[in-house]
Image 1 (spheres, rainbow, N blue to C red):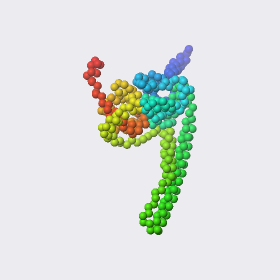
Image 2 (cartoon, rainbow, N blue to C red):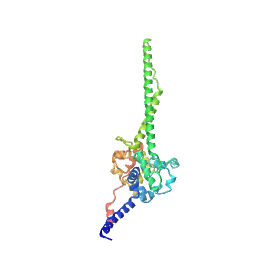
Image 3 (tube, rainbow, N blue to C red):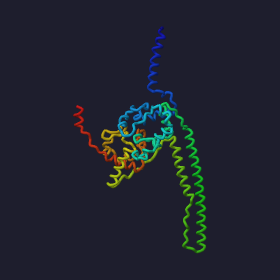
Image 4 (cartoon, rainbow, N blue to C red):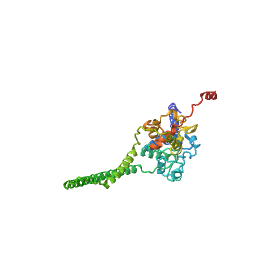
Length: 348
C-alpha cells in the first residue's frame, strides 16, 4: 500500500464511521418528507416526555409517573399492530378531541372517545395541518402508511367556507328585502291611520322568518371560517380579566368541583405533582395557593400560549366555569415549606 492510499483510508474511514453513527442516532430522519419532519419536531416538543423518543413504552422521562396512575399508561406507538388496527383518523381524533370527564360512565363506555384524562388534547394548540403532520410522524414510528388526503381536506374546508359565504350573502339580501317591504307596509299603514284620524294607531311588530335564517347562516359561516383558518393557523384567543369574586359558599363548591376536574377531566396530575405523586413535566403545585395569583392562573388555564408562547402545556379547551373551578382548587394548595433543617440532616 502506498502512502497516498494509506492517507486516503485514514481520511475516509472516520467519515464512514461518523455517518454510520449519525444514521443510527437519527434513524430515517434524513429521509423524511417535509410534513413528517414537521411532525417529528412537534412530537419532540409535546409528546416525547410521555411516549418516548421512538414511541416505546418506558422511554419518556414522565413514563414512570404515568404508569403508577389508575389510567392506562401511554400507548406503545412503536407497536407494529397499529399499522393495520388504527386508522389515520383515529390517531387524529385522539390528539384533537374535547376533554371529557373520565369519571362519567357515558364517557368510559363511549367507543368513539379516543382518550383518557392523562393525555391532553392539542385541538386548541396546534393547527389541523400540524396535527396531520404529527399523525404522519406517529405512523412512521410503527411502520404504518399515512393515507389520509390532507389536500382534499383543505379543499373541502375551502368549499364549505365558500358555500357558507354565499348562503350568508343570500340570507342577508333576503333579510334586507324583507325589512324594506315591512318598512313600506308600516309607513302605508301609518299614513292610512293618519288620514283616518286614528291618533291611537301603533304599527304591529312583525317578526320576519328571514331574521332566523340570517342568524343561522351567520353561525354556519362563522364555524366554516374558523375551521378553514384553523386548518393552517394555530388557534388564538383573547382572555379578558375575570372577576373572580365569589361568596365563601360558592368558593367551597368551586374548590370541590375544581379538584374533580383537575384529576378526572383535564388530567393535570399527568404533568404536575402533588405530595410527590404525579407528573414531572410541569412544576409541582403543592404551594400553588401561595405562589400563584388567581387572575394569572385563570388566564393561564384559558390560554397558556398567550402568556408563554412556546410552553409545553397545551390549551386544554377550558371554558369559563371550569377555569374558575380549577383556579379555586389550586388556591387551596398551601403545603408548608419543607423543613430545611431535616433536609440538611438527612443529606449529611
